[in-house]
Image (tube, rainbow, N blue to C red; front, side, top):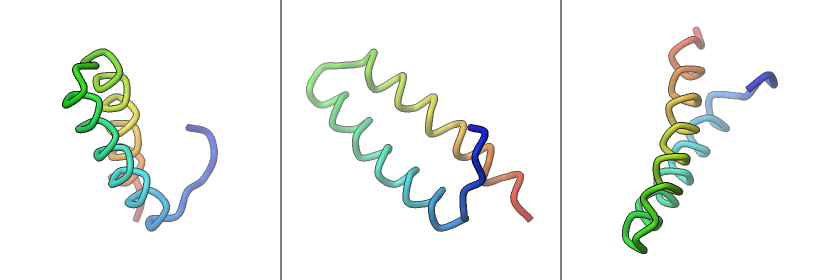
Length: 51
């Protein structure tokens, strides 16, 4: 993630991706869900680095 995101953008992305990960798990796609969770972790890290 080399672009700068606003706090609101990060929170929105986390919310949207969390819903997609839950859907992937419900549909029996654990690999997809794990990949999405990795993206969420990256956004959470970026969120933690914001002042």
